[in-house]
Image 1 (tube, rainbow over the protein chains, first blue to last red):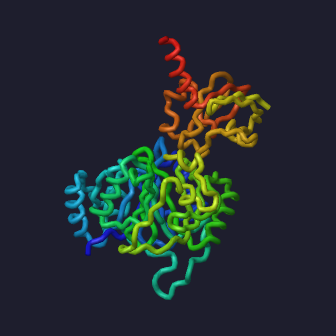
Image 2: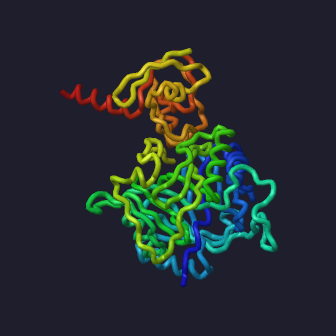
Length: 304
Length: 108
């Protein structure tokens, strides 16, 4: 069975490359793995591919592209055909356009975000290796997440983008938020791994980033992340709480360019045959912030 | 200490702002509902039109949040500016509404 393995990489626009690299290495605790042109490449300690985050200097913030890793090189041609059949235009991005990357298939999502599929990428290994490994490496810095976890994007037509992920990329839909009478889909949570979401969409302007989330192990790590963020005077959006949707534990904050980050822990395991969970839009406050039970203006409106 | 007059959400507020504070931070400290987002010059939620007064805008910011043209026309991001005199500001959203209202009045 052909499948998309995971959200493999995210490229973010940043206003100041030095400040951003300092933040993502010292505060988030990622490792710099290379530089090319105006971009810096990073990975988390538990990831084994060359990079999962690319920071690219720009005069604006936001998402440049997101990319999913497919299981075999032949999957590229398979998905290329399916994407074209759906009605999206694909182009091939040649090897080594970016550092450490093989060929990729590029297309634009129905929500206007630039997306790629790839299989080939350089291998660096995790910080603990694969032979009698320790559970975590000595000398970790900052929040030190295990991995890039998921993205939340905004867009106008969530029904079509959901159909794209389910029909074309074979994702499951773990949760959805609907208005009265199920007339409109205003939130859609999609997975290809066994996590509650690998990518999610909420109703909003097209082509915008809501947040990029990094996966930490436990609520304790979320709380420690919050301590670190205060020590480094990083602006918070939301202090530690629980999500109703996904049941995860969370904290939201902003990178030096205003891109929202999340440290995310827990959440249930998703399975392909699980029934989709539905939230009524009138209960969205509880769905997003289970304790506070109401949304905040900054969470809804601050986008990059 | 400078005096800031702020029009936002169809309301008017007056508050004090120290020279080393942003007008956004000073307002929040007074529990004034200043539209707040990333506080990093990235999202543009705190965009203001400066009607009167001296200020210094941090130039490293998202040009999507505050373009060069807006900068030249007296718009600013309240999360990354410093106040250099008493200041009269109005949120970009309220300013736009006011312009629409004014032009409707004129058309009468």
